Image (cartoon, rainbow, N blue to C red):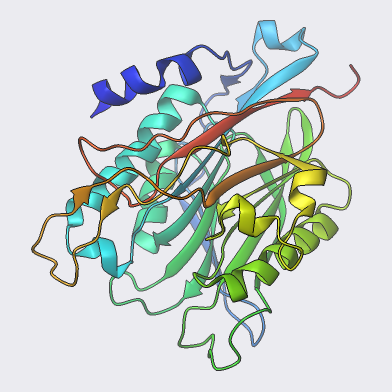
Length: 330
């Protein structure tokens, strides 16, 4: 699969330089910390592998006036009924995250539909600290139970974080036993200055996803408090739906998207139709629902999603783009 990916992505990933290099490994880990859930706050897991590498300016980058910041987002389809019937799908999805980490050197990686074991595996394989927010504490399709969203941040060190259940939801949901949609934001210290990076996974139904998108944007903007910010996630809304007044049209006036809007991001294959032993069949993606939004500071390099059809992985495409960010004091 690596050969196919390299051929497909060579013009979008390999042609854009990254003005950074890795610092020597920090070997104090591995360490983990669990912040228990409360009545209105989800559980949090922080994990740092033993050989974390933080980025620092290269010799060339030290004299630059801006830095290219690759940002990745991927819905792994882990812990999801559609994918668990074929375990190889999740393994390939994790392989894609690790592969693109090595090829592109992302500063931030947003992950949706991730189990605890996937999160811990990917922090180790990407040599990056990360934080996971738990949307469902006991998912039978996750080996370790926990299921939710996560941010890996090889490009910065965590300073603070915000995790919450989205308040716009079906009132019949019990967040102690049901999956309640969550959002996660991290304030990070990078050599380009302080940044806020967020991820979310909104409801499948537009009636809930539309107001959740607005809540996500408002909450993340308030938390960032003027810091440059990245808002990624699986919105389960097409661009036309996201522009509706009852959704969050302000994304299009206050931010920029790093994924080409006219390129669909899912589904990459047909589901099993209730029969796990039936292999999924590749399809052409039909909807744009995955987003990477950045502030309107500096420039941006949008990219096409990578949608594997030869060796299937998640039912979502892998998305990424580049923020051309001006360095402080330039």
